[in-house]
Image (cartoon, rainbow, N blue to C red; front, side, top):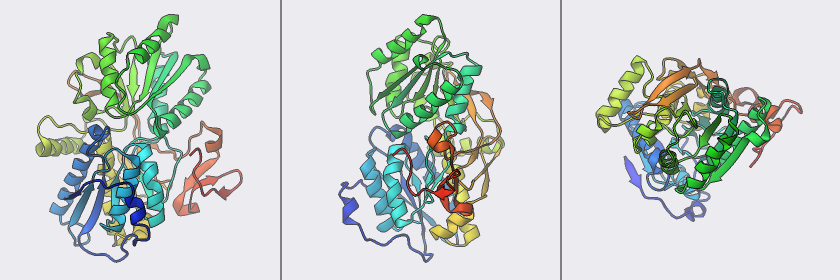
Length: 427
């Protein structure tokens, strides 16, 4: 693996006009790995770098791709959004990678997006996100809101009887947009405005005492309170630590999280967190032969205490789909590979099959898991595969939009005006 340090953001300007992706196939096939190895997001993203290295090594052991060895080119954007853009540009113009797998936060993805579109690059994005986007240069292998946030709200409403909601998030694109969708959905379900509390905190936030106290106070009416958490990165450590410090258990105040998985729990004392929840599309505890093999390979590589998680599975699916598309197209050319991606299927690790849709999103099952004392999840509910929506039905401006790249050559088609909008909404 080639590893180079993060450059100054000014490198964005320095490489303007450099050549885009190479159009002629050459060896080795280069895969860019764009994940933070330092900064506040390293707690989540370092594992995804390791995942990509394992997938590449496994493929090379099977003979590589198109007669070539695959080389991973690893860079560290250091949890800094402008640096994500600069490093993506370097990967495409200097390293001449054929594809990029990377980013975690929507802020980092949004920073990279104009560079991908300018240079006609291709990126696979492996993390749940807020939707409201469909770019011809990104395949979204994580969940959209209808595959995570909406089912989580339904679980709290129908299974836990939650009547008052605290929507707690980190202050950036993903939590704010997801919570806009959740607020609209909860109102649609009969939850009053005064029963929805929304709060945002910075990345790395550590003093949670006042916020947790305010949320607990919502229960003074006698109604059941629940937290839907879009807190990201190492701020989760402080949040769950404060819950334990105030002796708040999952029965009194259930929390369902979208960015806390096995990797994040591995750094926490999980005993006080038993019973709290997470909504994902994969858990390590999933019961399938393929998952047993995946977990065993990961532990053999990383050590017996190593854990797997949902974004790792998203990279597993995305990488295998990309390999299949390259083989079908007989080239790593971006346009040809993109055309070959539609309809690709890969067995997922939970026993079903992932399919790439015309809107660049996957079909995925929805899993609700309960934290156990060993830092794993007891799967309480699992659906069949749900098609991912690029545009939500719960925001009026988005409800009229659809995405269909092979059919309409458009990711933002207005079904009322029958026109293709060229810019993304809400940003």
